[in-house]
Image (cartoon, rainbow, N blue to C red; front, side):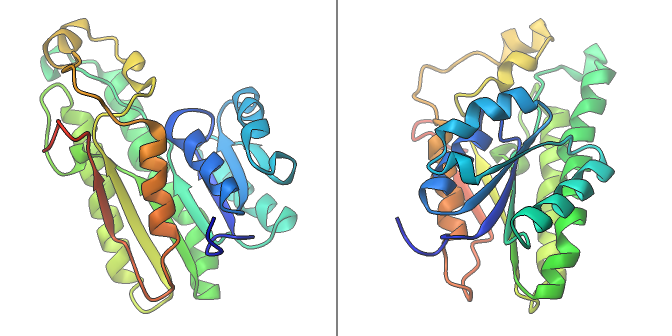
Length: 247
């Protein structure tokens, strides 16, 4: 354990499973004061005991697509734990779908969570960070924010949005003490694939390659690395891939 994250207040959205849960656990091992946020409070309560200091963490049911809920989350954190030092946005959805199949509800959900959710996260924490001249916003993006994959056109578009948003924010906040990082994982062993209902797209593009994919903990280590740097060092992007699935 390093001392870089000890007693830092870190909000993790999408913390009920997968990458978000792994990030929350690893942050707790580093001594951070972790706030677990996701829509499903029961799932968050299941993750909380696995944290190094579960009793010292805070659980808050939050839908990142709701700006008011994100604002309420940050307000509660400031009362219970103090100012937010970092936010790690792990909330996201991914649907394999062919454009010709016109699965509009899945398109809209992708935009709501991946794009609008990212905006709401930034909007909730940025004013306080600018006022304090210190803070770090980390967003779990994807290698699909660098390369467009067939069957994932809308998902790729949402991650290109995240990358553009983060780059613009990074440029606007230069000199303010605020850091902005995107972590771009390749194929990760999570339940995201189970969201997809387009069997044709899954058959064509969603089949496993046989290579060892990333575990959520592999991505979490990248987040810890970015958050643990000295104040004058910014890790802008981290591309982390399965060894045998380069882009």
